[in-house]
Image (cartoon, rainbow, N blue to C red; front, side):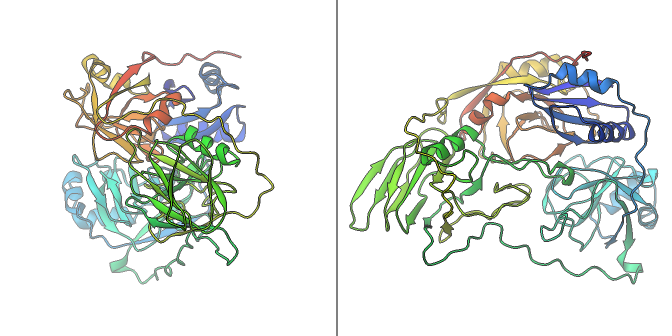
Length: 533
């Protein structure tokens, strides 16, 4: 058992195999340690997020070191049968890699009973174990940028089904019409940890496929009545997103936290208008976004500072300042100009937006496609009518840090690990010895970086899928890293050389395209040594 640093509030426990991982997960679930906030099991690791004011990494490691890992989790009585058309584009390659015929690959896959070991990567993506060992094949050397929803695939000792279209490197052997993830179901994920799974060949079976799922209700819809206060979005060159402080407690279904990329700015926007700090706001990339108010209200804009102009019904125009309450009257039109610094602004309205939570949060996860719909032109946003929780507006809010502009250098502190030892010393040095350019391919999932010197790994072996944290600097085979932001996949298969310190995550979320990042390690890589209580 090894204890590897992830961040200031998370560690990775590396175990001998999947059985030990699931045994430790079950032990900590049945007899929890005070201060643990979340756990994400993977192939042979368990990532644990904890509250540092209650628990240190060393004491947590000491508690874990005493746990019995010999217990095995009994199989579930639940059996899920999945129809498959074995028409995958990698089916022939899998046959060649295994030395089997295509017919034998299909026969061995349908003849296996799998178990959902854990969920990750995307909502509803179950990692299935227990299949025929002859079907163990490596990931593709070159991952695809888009794999269709319903693709049945193999990688290593796992089988799985992609719940939605997404990038991926698994070997596709077929497709299924079944929906792996459906918010009209309870629970939404068809695969739950512990469930048994069998696949059957649609070409050779008369078993009926389940009826199509009911259309998911519009999570972002608002109920608009004649007397309700509304904002009508007039223009939105880039769709705005509802965000709050995040979606927690759903990792068992493969759902990560998401949430505002600049949490401090979201909290400040709510304080300016007198809302509770976690009230949903609109996260906007400014530059032409405009809306009209149907009545008297107070709004605020924080985060990336952009010009704010207000045109009233009489045609007069005034300007307003960020981080200050802005009073609106019926017919007022607010337009946001381009921000010279930063990347994202946060719009709050007194009382809060009336938006339907999904899995306990109003955050829109762009990778997982969970949460309210994006806000585009002609969207009508309704304001909550309940005002009992409101407080006085705040006149003293200011930005927590100076926001970066394109072309400037931003320094981010990094906790080294958990896989720094997968890189040569030259590779580790290259992380901090050079500047990394923020490329246009960056988004809420992560910041894609480009550097003159690729990060050099010690070998070419594959990393079994393991959990990743927000701020993780993951390094694919190209050696050009990706800095994961709030919408990152829950698990990943490339080594993480380090993780941006939590206190710099808001800053990371505001770095614009064409800025440069300098990583500054504030720790050196070392296993965490358990401390006895």
